[in-house]
Image (tube, rainbow, N blue to C red; front, side, top):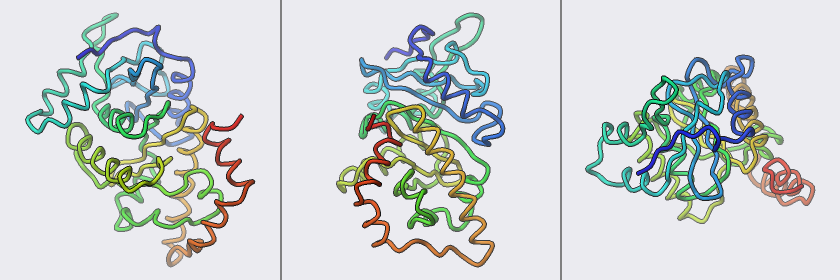
Length: 258
């Protein structure tokens, strides 16, 4: 199993996305919170290293990992958290220990089921507040406003699990069942008591999805404080999605349309 530290493999798009998500005014991550990744053409995954600050990220703050061996490790019931920590270690380079993020298995699970170029995982304050509330599981069951529906669609919820092996296994299982139901890749995955995962084929789209998730959490928190959420009727959302202009807009936001 190969975990490689090679700054030459890291794209400018991934570094820019990571720094943008680490900007304090966006409230997506502080200190060493959050992580990002990019799927390379050869199938390897470039992911942020553990303990590195997103706002100050450089190409040196990433390592590349192989998806399939990590997936097999995760699915082996005998594998432990220590096993995971060991295989994520790329060794010491330029005077620093380089180890892939402890949440790398989230990124691996996505690539194993719904391959996508960019992934951004963050812990926005308002989203974490919502995910730590009694409304966490059902908060995003229905759209609260039109632009939310366009940008993030129908989010997928994953209950809390300890970050690392436990979260990776639960995340994979929820995503696998979602795929088996025939539903499309969710743009946003919410994590109980934890944060969000934004998925898209462009870095700009990951930024947009993350920003809209923050606004959506604020809208809900405000609505709950005012007595509850009056959501958009589901049949209205369905007909809205079917409109040609909305289909085109969603494609552009997801990076599928030039």
